[in-house]
Amino acid sequence: MTSLLKVGENLLLELDAERWQCEPCGRDLGNARENVKRGLLVGERDPREIHPPMIKGEFTFAPNPEWVRILEFYCPGCGTQLETEYLPPGHPITHTTEIDLDSLKRRLAAGELRIENGHLKVVEA
Image 1 (cartoon, helix red, strand yellow):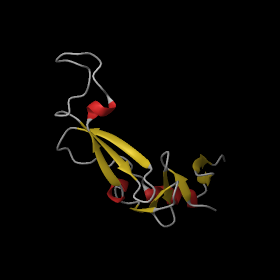
Image 2 (cartoon, rainbow, N blue to C red; image 1 turned 135 degrees about the vertical axis):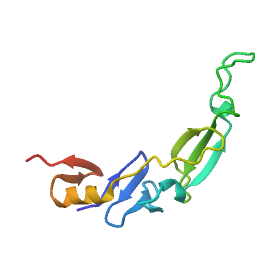
Image 3 (cartoon, rainbow, N blue to C red; image 1 turned 180 degrees about the vertical axis):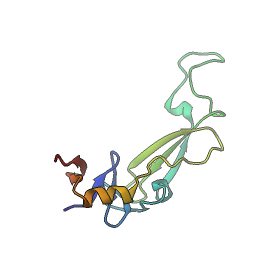
Image 4 (spheres, rainbow, N blue to C red; image 1 turned 45 degrees about the vertical axis):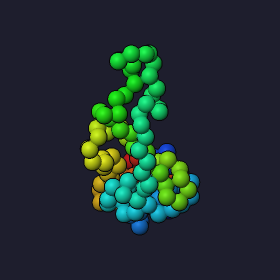
């Protein structure tokens, strides 16, 4: 039985080893009991690069870089972008992916769940 669980578009959880893993390159990204972002490269983007002004003038419908920053998180092995977040300047990086590993392992061991092609499936009684 495989213990690789697909958590995001390019993010895997190696359940037995409790490690985050980049799906495209297989790189180990750190302890799954910690924030996956600790093992990633971070790039900060000016929000106006992604959301350019829609009209001229003081109010342009573009995000104000004094109010928001865009952080992009990349695999240090292959450069695949794994996550993006919008935060106010000075706000700490968030912990967006947290899995109760103990409960998940317990439910898998009890036969309530199974991993099939990287996805969790409920076992019908």
